[in-house]
Image (cartoon, rainbow, N blue to C red):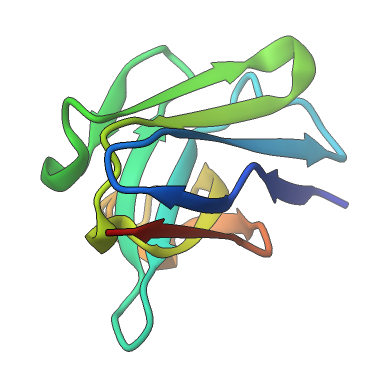
Length: 124
């Protein structure tokens, strides 16, 4: 059974940084697309970033230049380095794995596996 466990969330001041981690158990991630979504209160879940198994990456426009996704396949872990955080980045951040290919990668409906989420709160 594949399980995803996020960590690294917390409270940070605007302009600060956090690094989220997502540990995958149950199988290796080397052939998985791994990504991050987030959901703020009262808003829909939205795409943040994805790391493809071939090495390429895609980002939402609102995080380009501030967030970096990376992965360590040997550790079955994907990371999200978040810099220059803004209050509007406050959300629960979810790790996702295994893009189904049945739609656009920015849709939350096209991933087989989800973590439970980790709260990120950015104070102004």
